[in-house]
Length: 272
Image (tube, rainbow, N blue to C red; front, top):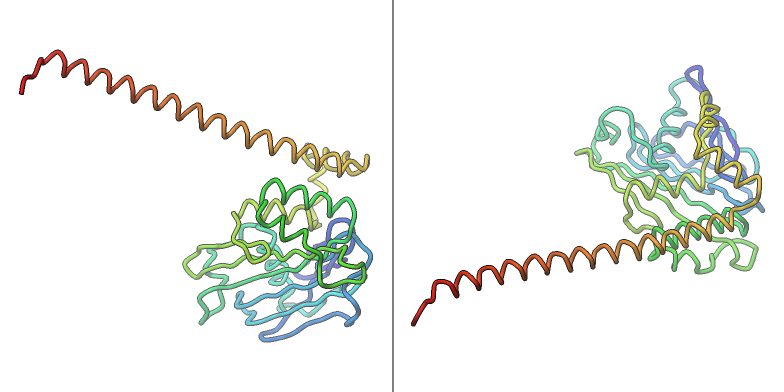
């Protein structure tokens, strides 16, 4: 999805990696916003097809469904454009400005933001599949089940990302309705969405971003995914080996201590 949200003298574009982007629109309490109502499975690698917000700040319930192409969201000052971008930041695992509990709508105990992504066959889907296999294997198995939607005979995949805020400040993240660490949500969202702001060009100075662009230019997504999976397997074996070595060292210390106690008891020459 393609788009830009304007407000307060600044603009940001939220782009699904490899394809389209959105420009968020202000949603009102208990509103249901959509684009043009067309099919939401275009032939692009990644697309945010639905965004649901509940009990976040002034939003009671908002459902946004995006169509193919550019989705522009506009509105007068105070209509909620910045709040919508804030909801996207929350979904992508970013830290909210101010106290987390302040973002929960008055009268509610928890705020929730969910986004549904559609991934078409291609390098982006391969990268997401490799990441899930390495980091969230229990979700990877379900992710590889064919999608029930789309015209490509189940070749597409859908992924639901979500994050909730409790009034006491606690946050929870989930992928396909399974709880995951916040760090995992943030890493996975980075594979799906790009957010372009006024200072986003500074990312070009980030060595990690430079490496990602170089891999993309060389069309090395599959190779990078395979390498990442192999490295993840190696790290897991290394962790298991270190655990066993630590257990063996602990057993050796325990045995030495017991032998010491036995020698002390023998030295006492206790008799019944």
